[in-house]
Length: 337
Image 1: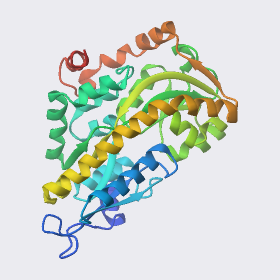
Image 2: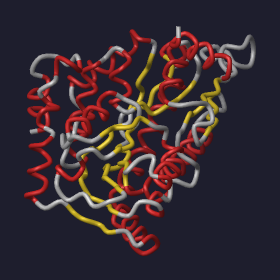
Image 3: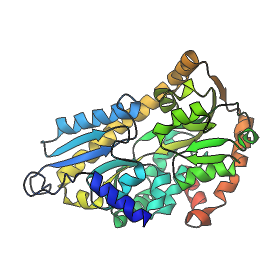
């Protein structure tokens, strides 16, 4: 009943903008308006990149595809948006693997596991593989079209209210995580108390002590000013997040091949530039947090990284709980070699 209420609310709150009799008939010479549901504001790196995508679609297209951007979760959370997409709404949202795994394709969730990727090149080896292409194609049976996986939306680090040097230090700490099973289980395995929470609520929760820490890319930690209220940054780099940009499969099928190519090719083009910018700017964001917030930054040494990898090993032993195919971890490791 709760799920049904959420779905109904999503449909009620999101005005249909596709499929109108004359002006919205994509595939028949009409106009389609895609609404981008972003949890970031337009001054953050992802927000700025989405504005660039919007501009590129307008410049490269013939006017039959329009992009509207709704920052700061104005349309709702990721789960609400993915639910709406399944109902045929012309929404665009970046579904991280941890979220997407909950929508009927559990194998993709493995890509959100801790310390899986060492660099962006390994991410791209996966997303260019036959295994990955076959896996994301399964979402179409669930009403979701994944049309781009180019963007690596940052390397996630741990920011806490008290120092964390080794895995044991995190035990019992209330750590904010996005509301998905994968990240919840990562921090549960580490002995923390994971708290699923929207990004917009993190600053106040850190400030009041409702949570003891959170994890995000340096660009997000800086843009959201989390460093003002939490002072210890451990550069764990525990995740590199592949963003699965998705829309409604029903909407996608009604688009012309030209419209589909415009949307996917420009998203990939902007994504490649965004990825390079993220790599180039991470050090700068960290230096800004030190200068402006006086935070203490601790890199992982080879020894502490080994300790963290050992501490999260039980996570990888739970393939049955996550519904992963047998031997999937080894298969993904082999693709990256």
